[in-house]
Length: 412
Image 1 (tube, rainbow, N blue to C red):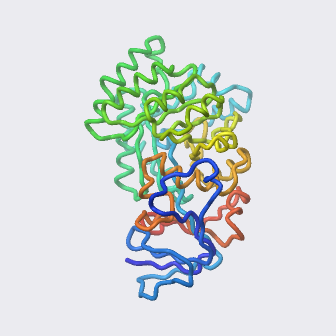
Image 2: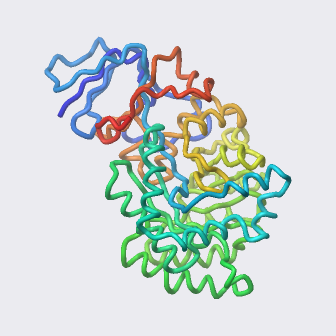
Image 3: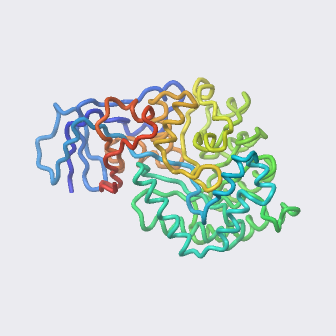
């Protein structure tokens, strides 16, 4: 099946295949072709260029995109969309003055979600989660990472990961799975941290490897959760079973988690709302992708990742949603891109790069997703008619998506 799309007002994020991420000043450059065409063959990008070079061959289907733009689908490298129920009451509690930490100390937060998840069957959990996945696909996301971490028991964590695996088997969107059993200490291990860590290391991680349920391992390295030493112990165990690190760090405090991530060559370090100079310096000239989660900052009213300082230091930066029931009940990457521009002072070019090519890198998908590149997946968004791509973050409350293609097929 071949499809030709013609009269594209502007084709965004056109890259050579050897460009896997962009850093520093490169993030301000978004390569585009105006008045362009795009050819897709089956599920891959086959060709593109200016309309004056349009191929004179026959195609199975032709789409006229006059006035519209095309860009790669969003690559959301940090989500928790497999969860049970919601935490609406905690939202109200925060409005009434309680902090995220205070809610957690009262048995809310992650422990609240864990209780609900362990009371939910795997089938029910799948049904709830697939609705969220379908929603983010309609919103333009074409690759997503999903974490466990709301089970905090052997059965609960494995249940979540099996649901993630089932979603990956039934939907065309690229899905990467992360084991985040070290999301919080369950009440039964409140005074026995090493006992819970032993459970993760000796029982859950080997079973994950046996069933091939995850590609990554994550730890919430934060004051009141997992210390740096505990984080490193868990990461080392995961690496021993072939799980690559992706770590929650610097959400509320800077305690050395970034340095541990770099030490173990983590694929990404995520959150980064609180960054010291030494944290930024630790990330320079490494393979680790910093990931910002601006809609989490928006929802919790906490600081935003200091994007300007990080980019000025020559770092790359990715954007993701952190879609979860407690701190970011939204998987809308369009809002993330807009919020990064509005609150983090990223330019539209930087934000689009962060949400596409750099997001793909943060999921080991750089060779197949994140840019308009020959032989990459035919995953792209066709916008409604817009004056420029600046409209995407500018009109932050408007749905500017006309169609979403994933694996060469329209899904919205």
